[in-house]
Length: 279
Image (cartoon, rainbow, N blue to C red; front, side, top):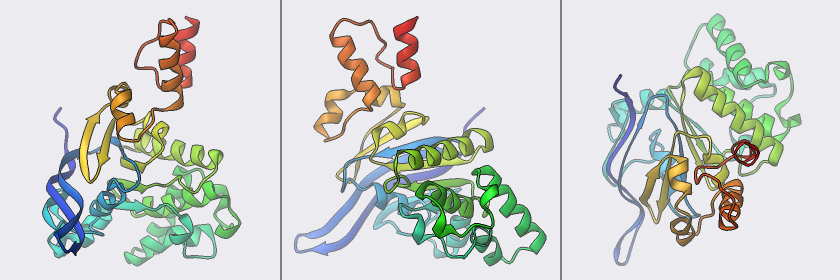
């Protein structure tokens, strides 16, 4: 069965401002496509263009040149922006910037209410979204009393209640402790695997890309690597030249191989490492 494209960038370039020598480019000649149902990580060092690219995926930023299509709609046509932002929901780094109400369920209802939906459908969407992110028991709680991971899951629920086809997460775990990071990543993976929602994860944590279908590496506003996590993280020296590390388990496996332990180069998780060491 052929795949269906939800995001396509063709020759995408973006300049924030002009300098004395011309354009100051944040993105240059980006060509990529993301299929419906894919889980894709976009990695890169600070200043590589990750967040700038993410903001193009729901038309918060528009190309300086080239084109970007979301669900077949060209973002440069402002008449498409309402549909694009319903198709591609965005979750940002700081959940406090997306939480607007005094209770969890009111916050999740905010988006559907602004769509003018009937009360019964809003209630259904709120309950469904909170169930999907594991926050049903907190619907009457005040958001400011929640942990960072819980707040981010509420922010995700608020986007999910809009029924997007694609979920874009821009550094969603950057401000969280390890437990909060785990909660958010498990939630996102479940939404992808069980609900079929396309997920685009922008991150600088290499280990967060391990569970994805495909990884894209940016450097100085250009795509420099594309492949499965196994393919990308086997290119250790190239990653280091870009100022990036490999996931800790992959690094440990590499050092064990250097000391004569027979391990596959595709080892990326603790479970995979234990399995190969013990069997």
